[in-house]
Length: 273
Image 1 (tube, one colour):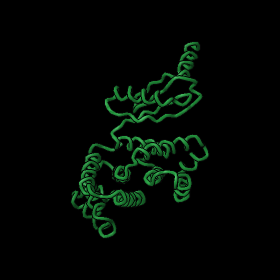
Image 2 (spheres, rainbow, N blue to C red):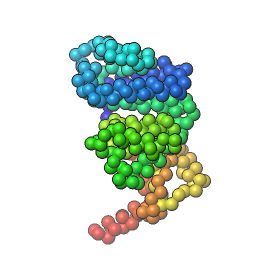
Image 3 (tube, rainbow, N blue to C red):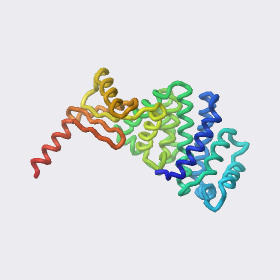
Image 4 (cartoon, rainbow, N blue to C red):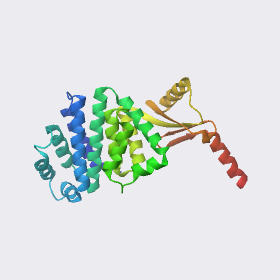
């Protein structure tokens, strides 16, 4: 988890990025996202550079000048300004710089999708792709294997998604392959779904049912949860016959499990005592 000081550095860099891209097109935002993520890849491969850019013995302006000397003329002015603003901030550990740089790249991709008007599609496609992966153990192992060449895993993701999902979805899935924020591949996908929903000012509710919900029932459940949480809720429904019946809902740390499977397990535990 990022420290409060790195979160402040991220917030300042995001503010700079937002101010500099108010009139940018979706394509321009996507290009900036790729540039930021290319710097994240450099930081991932160069721990000495991460340490230099977070060295507390150097003033923030010095760290910003160091990064500026490396990327000016190679990347856009927006990217340079955003990332030099970032490294001028403080970090509790060098790894935090990598995490928040990745987060800025993801935010730029989401801004691109928002500008293109397909942010809701990206959210749904990321969730569905996560379901496909979790439902196929062989695929999950292959995509999650850090020992496998990244290029091979990227090619597999492209084969699965290219032409079937939004460009931002494909790029975010590739970000997940690197272990977004130090998470597993599937954990990265889940976090990216939540960030996409947050960009739409929504909470994510993971709903598990034994059989598909009728559209009216989905709408009623979403409305009830929205009333409870005080904001719109995006339902992510997983059909799992093993729960037998009822509904399980997970929102952040809150779990509401009304499935028949839970009741049966409780009964078994009671009989075992």
